[in-house]
Amino acid sequence: MSPATPLPPHQRLVGKRALVTAAGQGLGAAIAAELLARSCDVAVHYRSSVAGAETLVTRAVELGRRAVAIPADLSDRASAETCVDRAIEALGGLDILVNNAGDLVGRRSLAEIDADFLRASLAINLESMIWVTRRARPALEAAAPAAIVNLASLAGRKGGHSGSLVYSTAKGAVITWTRALAAELGPKGVRVNCVAPGLILGSAFHATHTTAESAAATVAGIPLGRAGSPEDVARAVAYFASEYDGFVTGATLDLNGGVYCA
Image (cartoon, rainbow, N blue to C red; front, side, top):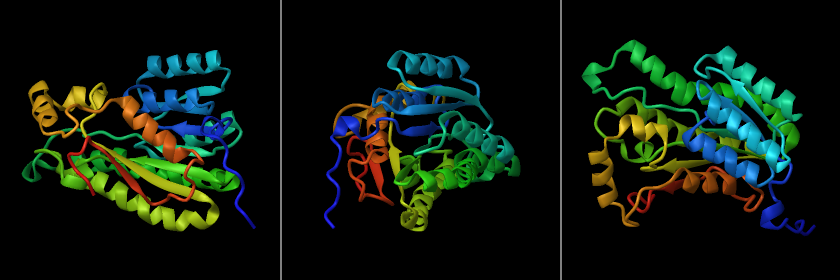
């Protein structure tokens, strides 16, 4: 049997239902906006960025799409599961899951790490993704072909800057989780891929954790001569989410301007 004729690029996400975590600002907001622009319906999770989430809902209405803003603390398992349930109920199912939530929490050396810091770092960067994905799995399998896109980091490849030991470890685990989950869910029709951004200016993450001097030094070493933007990341996520290249799963796409090439 010959494969079905693929849809043209502008139609591949029309009507798809997506949940984007941490979508009230920064990378998540750009990803949600990109999916809306490509005619997806989007559940916009946020923890505190209510204004940004509501802006996306308004944008969805303008585009004739459905969107819902859902507050939740994803570091709490029950809250994470409720978030997924609300997204599925609001959208009538789920075709795409974007696990974007994560945070450096703080910079600490090995000697400065304590149990509370370790738990908080792993809860938001790794455990939240696991609980959200676990809850979303039945809906994604029911909608197959479906897609999961995880957000890792260049830190998960290279180890990160000083003080990011736990964060880098968690993001490395996201990359491994992506490979392992792709093998498990592939037979169910769910592709699982990952993007690993480098320096992306215009996001709350780097506004909080990266000084202007550090950003300038990093840019000086980027072969393309600039930092990335949230829109750079959003386009890559939309590529993985779409049916454009449905044979790709278990992959990690490095978005860093050439600083690191796997």
